[in-house]
Image (cartoon, rainbow over all chains, first blue to last red; front, side, top):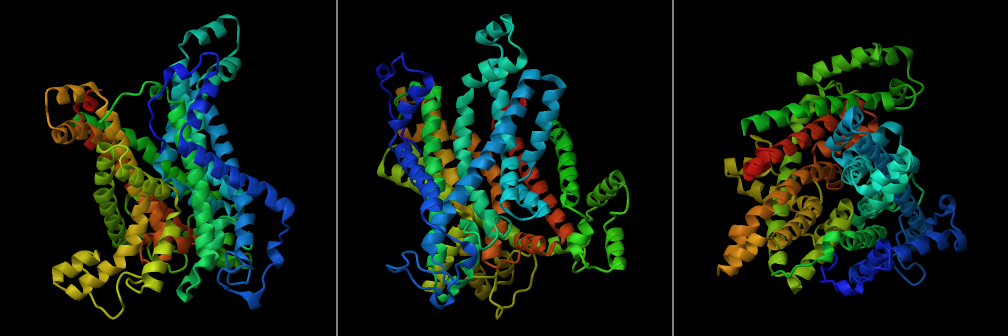
Length: 301
Length: 334
């Protein structure tokens, strides 16, 4: 959680835009900076590894070298098929980030459009959309994702769809309340008065002014999405072996814990944890930086 | 108060109908013919027809739905395709194991999470606060199954202190009364079984507790910090009340409302976390059973367990709402 530091209000120069101020404020939180660098690291790994380090998951097994503990040749050891765990963890980064980003884009896109329509049109459209969201929220999130993938069949594509669907109601609620709070404001009436249509008003005037809670939710949601993708992979419903997805790697190797092989379990799990931690740190920092209440900090205990 | 409760229950009806439609639709979301997907492409025609009839899939879809709901209301969740036993009987046999695990996890989460949050807020920016919030952040960032595996490796494989799997050693006998093993062994005064069942509970319930614990601690802290900025706290302090009194008698009472909601919401996390935790620790509850059923394409079990877990979740959230209104009179009159 980011530190609640008292702000030097004088430092917030009016000439900077709200987002620029927010970014500067966020940068003043050490935890948000750490989160940013952790994410940057994984993003760089995810971009560079597939380009510079060829890997064919199908022809990778090397049984004579199975379950070797970490060494110089294999920094993370080898798994039960003799595959280099370090290499597989590195090649898992693009998969997890891709799942997180695609799932969040899906949830954010569908959810915020539904919520904005509900808040803007009100009436029966609002009732129908929000009751549907209530129904989706009635399911525990992981259970719903498991159910969707169990029905549609295992695989990365369905994993992304399932995790995206599960996150739709959260965005819809945020977007709806944002529209409700902004639609009566003067700048909206002004836009309508000069003849802007409903779509223009919604997407060009209301959305940019109410974007911050959605951005915060999306950042934190990437963390949840990576965790849920790992859980689905672990249950055999996500990425399929031999794909080097972190959750699936754990489920491949955990049975060998009883013979003392901890390394094929420890390292993919650490990779999941660090990625999720990065997004959580950044999301917390963003939330604190974008929260207008944070401008006025009161002295506390 | 009563009108509030009735209003909340009535507002649940459309949600429950929606949930039942989605769970019912599950079988129709399966690409292709669900019966062929269960039995395999090469199944004999008469078997395919038998299962189709047994599952009621030969009728029009709206009729199937009403038949399904009619049965569910009577507690009939259909029969397992593999074993042909009623799903409800199996749930009744396996639910206590899950409930016991979830209950212990919740006890851990509340007993550690709430005090940690209070101390963090009261001693803000102290070493304890920084450390506790760092640990809590790690807690929400960790895959629960990975933590479970690491705990099992350290305490069971490496140190050999605690058992890795199951609820009770096969050498120990215990007569089931309630299905809760700790309770059953207490009823019989069976101390050997008590110690053994508790040693089996520690690792899975700790693993399952981690995420709720971290979330509850973070929520308690931020909710209490928010409360401590209010005017009435300044008034209380300025009239010379001890910090302890202000904290416990004034702030905590009001800060507790969001914490109660958070605890309620965590029941959902516990129930879905149980699917993973039970799978790792071979815990014979409904979570591991659901996992097995997904792999075996035993769809009536999947539907039954999903419906049950969701109903429990909805019901717990109803209780939370009611308790909220009970704790805060303002909500009743809205």
